Image (tube, rainbow, N blue to C red; front, side):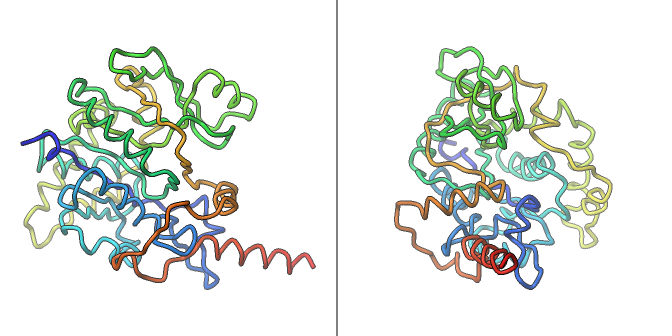
Amino acid sequence: MSETNTTWTLVLAAGEGSRLQALTTTAAGTSVPKQFCSLFDGPALLHEALRRASCLADESRTCVIVAEQHRQWWRETLATLPDRNVIVQPWNRGTAIGILLPLLHILERDRDARIVLLPSDHLVRQEAVLADALRAALERLRTCPGEPLLMGIVPEEIDPELGYIVPGERDRQGARTVAGFVEKPPFAQARELIRAGALWNTFIVVARGQALMALLQARIGDTVSAIEAAIAHDRGRSDAGALAALYERLPSIDFSRDIVAGQEAALRVVAVPPCGWSDLGTPQRVEEALRRGPQCAPRTIPPRAGGAWLSLAAQHHRLQTHHQAAGA
């Protein structure tokens, strides 16, 4: 099997998007996770993530992790993917479990898989810049298969609401070791971190599937074994329910806080040039993205992106109008 044919993308789309509920709750009171919203009036952010993934792997090797309770929002967008590439969680149990479950499915199909983890709720204005960096990271895995690569964006501004990766020494392949992580530092500390070369933590990861599994095994080995056993039990059974029963007992486990932190020696970080990236993680960052306007490149909406998406631009305008009227 060629290296190209071992490249998989894993789009993470099971989150609740609770930090943006003010902008993603409709006038009727329905809360829509932000990955199923559009920034302006185009495709949902999830569709943009699938477009991003398509630059690296075809649909046969593009997997998406989603939550059952969100089915009404993801069903249409994911209709063209093979059924087994849409991995449905009974409930969201944090980003670590959201990676582990589809990772087990991918490794069962391809033990040599190279995987790109892509969150589904990001804005990237210069997609080509990020795509080039991801392809270079995949190429690096040929010579350094055991080191997961964190994709860190060169900061474009001081943002105390983001996480930062502190790079260490440069290795012979051009990546850097990871000296540490700083989550949401005060403004002054964020400024000093940037001056020292710190990068925005994007939660985009490029790694061999086996190397990702090693990180998870090191911290939550019992959970890995329990999910493997539940999958095996449910396979081919008409009364499958072991995985759902297990999920009822699972705690929420965060990949950055509970898995990656403390395992810096096993990681590398790759600097991605500024590319207009935002995680749209707070109302303030959404407002800034809206102020800057749509991406420069014209966007077309293919058939599978159809649907009545909740536009964050329209929601923002509605809320502003409401607040202005209330203050009048």
